[in-house]
Image 1 (tube, one colour):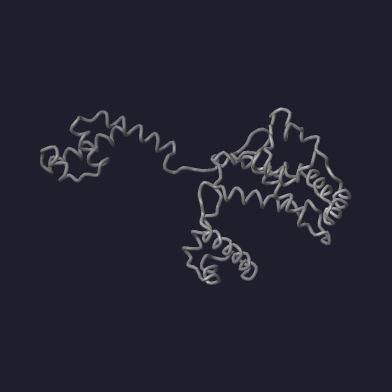
Image 2 (image 1 turned 90 degrees about the vertical axis):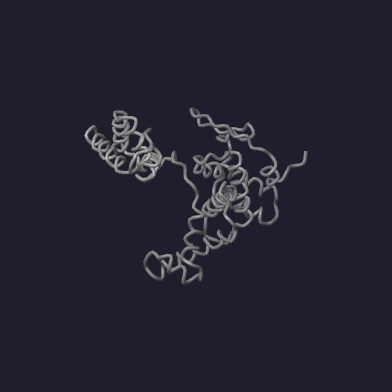
Length: 277
């Protein structure tokens, strides 16, 4: 039976990946990944030389021998809710690009070159498949702004402002700021930022809410309890005045009393609420 090229396997064949919490066993097409071959540095170099000369079998052996590298990298992206099947296949495409573009004359290990290629491919996939779509022009502006910021940081010896970047690119500060915000990837509130032993600290644990503190919650309960002790007319006036934003004149016309009466009832009701709280 003819052997399929690695690209065909990666793009067209679904990789069945199963993870067990207890055994840490991961399977691809029913094959335990712990049995995947690991190549030595010498084997990688020999296969790279052969692959560069057109040996397709050596090229495929080199790809298969680095699948464990892809698996280790996709673990960094497991908290995003993405399908591991998809991430693995995209990571394999990055690996294939690394194999085909690696320069043997460079004094660099293959894994050192391949890791950024694989990560870059996965990040492009996540960016392009993000629910929040960003136009090509906005992305281009953001990437040019990032490059300008890096260059200015070296020349100015400080963090450049949006105004500094604006002068270099010719775009307004507002355009640059909006473009940079548009390419920021959303992060899950349940993404762990620190783990000690078995206890993890998540992003949501480090976010404070000044509007919904325990004190505000208790005050709200006390206010509702105090409101229950008012007469129906007092309660009606307070609700119209402070919860629906009506003026005393509007309330007077609505319930059929004078504005002065509304003012007296409101003042007395507020004094009673203050005393009860």
